[in-house]
Length: 264
Image (tube, rainbow, N blue to C red):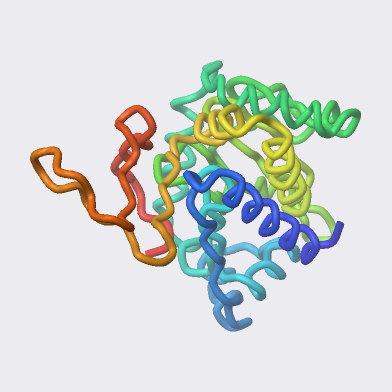
């Protein structure tokens, strides 16, 4: 699957999931592409050449907010922020040796069931992971390019694994579980497979998997025509044509205060 096909597949799956369960909210459209000069400037400031696949993404979309469970892909400007290196190091050190994240484990199992033999080749691990030919997975040297506002999901390159074609390994970290992939295109395939696996689950179970991988609660999409009118105090009835708010048991949890700003 080429990059454009993967992008189209992810966008279609996210839209289908939103139509299936409006509590997710409509997916955020990625911005227009960055200029070649902006991408080259980002590379100079980072002191490294971006993988060709990610350069191609930036030329189509300068970042991608909320691509999966609240995590977004960084654009040309956020990529150069040194703060993300500190966040990546803190995140991996915090979770080292931990086996948290039942939601990520459930998503992993759903993905394996969807992928069959292909899923078995993708190995999730707890903590920093097993020894690799190029060293143990660590925060030092990793270059983050995707993160969620609460720093529980991380996508990062490992420049030590750079190959002749310019691609390099990608480390994926979700709620205490990690995975090492061969390239950014494989990450897009993983995201698409996990979204597709959610479509095969009952609505409530799919919502549970989606929101437990990272703490990004769903939002309620307002009515497309008349909008939502608040219920007046004192228990008076809403006017005809108004939309009643859901009972407390069905309202989404309040979004936690974001610790980092992604695309500002």
